[in-house]
Image 1 (spheres, rainbow, N blue to C red):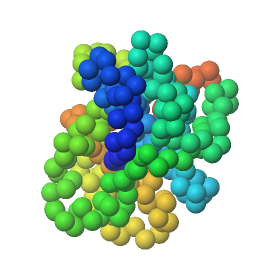
Image 2 (cartoon, one colour; image 1 turned 120 degrees about the vertical axis):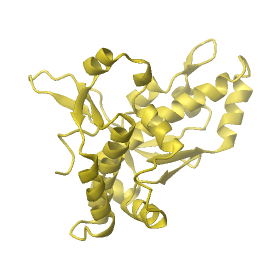
Image 3 (cartoon, rainbow, N blue to C red; image 1 turned 90 degrees about the horizontal axis):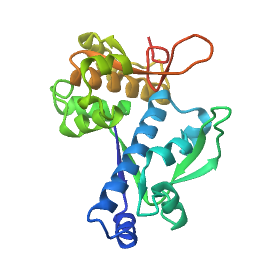
Image 4 (tube, rainbow, N blue to C red; image 1 turned 30 degrees about the vertical axis):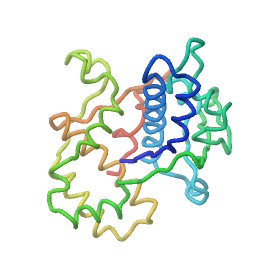
Amino acid sequence: MLTLSVDPKVLAALKAAFPKPANSAVKALSKYINALHALITEAQSLGKDPFNSRFGLQSISLHDLANRGGQIGSSRIRVHAWLEQQGYALVKAVETGSNLTGRKSRVKLTRWVTVTDHHSASAVKHKITQGADYLDQPGADEAAWIRSLYPGLEDMEEHEAQATYHITEVDQLSLARFILWLADRADGFSKAQRDRMMHQAMLIYRVAQFSRGLFLQRPKPSHFGRTYYAGVSVQNIHR
């Protein structure tokens, strides 16, 4: 799980530009931050290539960020565009991607935002040593994180969820043992490999805890007749 902390000056500037309706700036910035959070979480779970790891970059779709980040004001300006125009951009493109090829942009977080990684291998190991119930007792912040990854899921009927997601049962006990092994005894991997596997394992584990032992995968269209998934799935996790 990642935590994004945005400089209060960003919200203050947005409030000054859009004072009405009340709380519109708060809601708009929260929606934008949630969109950025979800994209970075997905990027972390899929793992960084050596270039991104070396220079502290993330590979995300700026097109998706702009679309999912919402709008504000009577002119319905995109929050992403407003932040860039006013000098408060939370991400800066180092290498621009392409919607035609599906290649994502390499971005660097700006001085207006900081990220804390709670699911790196070292962070999880620290939390496990602090309390034996860490894996048994997910916090409220993790519940909010899971909800942000599956927007609208709580309002869906069961048949709607089954039509939207492909659902897989999770052996939570075995996965918990894998997490403990990965945190303490997996010496045959690099730090980047361990972090990627831990991000994936903790994501699946926490989702399963909040969905009665199930993991939800979001299918994406394919012209080749094969099923592919967006984000973490059985197709790209460590086995």
